Image 1 (cartoon, rainbow, N blue to C red):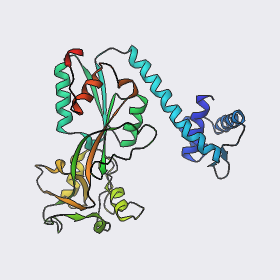
Image 2: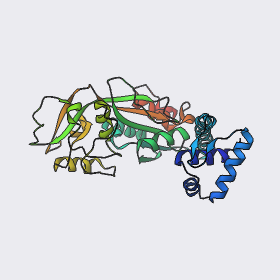
Image 3: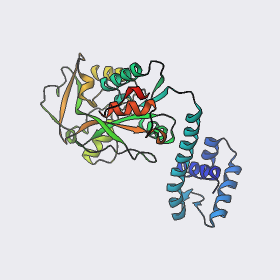
Image 4: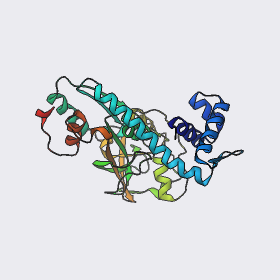
Length: 304
């Protein structure tokens, strides 16, 4: 199967539209239609219905394979590029709340071990970090979220498998000083589905977590939407009384004007997990050294 045809098929399946897929791929709509027809002819079965555009049973099966195939092709391309790139480079990608003193200290240790190291730090949403780690666009990815103690995060596919937990922190509801909930010893999230939650999908998508607890099935945020990735802005919105936010307790340490009320029910922790590009799982590259530090495994700086 031609990877270009698979890429077009995935675009149509994900957008549910031949025209939207054409816009995404910068093709004409007729070109998209021709490519889907060619793929269906190759496989000898319809993959998509038209009007409306939906997947056939065969199309559903192919989509699962196609997404993984395209990820592996991107990973192969990144691996080849990495093989001929100058040594001593590292790209770290992380979600905003995955940053911590632990990460900062590990990077400092890496720079001390490799004084000539050149590294980049990219902050983005969870979906991008997971995908970029799977395809090798970043060497190491750190993603965060809320889960029951010791439970892994539910990460998007493809590429969410093989994550390693590196940190857990108690979950708290951030409220401004003087808020009626500020004096509570603990809070039940199911009782807060009608509260004003700040919708911050790139930083702390608490609405999904709370609604899952309440089994409401939809996000519960009624407060403002913050589309940035700056944690300071989110904390400022909470402190000003615009809404609540579900956050790791460590984020509120030393912050004035804010109180973190522990989550009593259900038991939740803020968890950070590490994802490594396929090509960085062995060897003596900077990503392996940093991964060893973050997982508290001994590493030998002399090998770098």
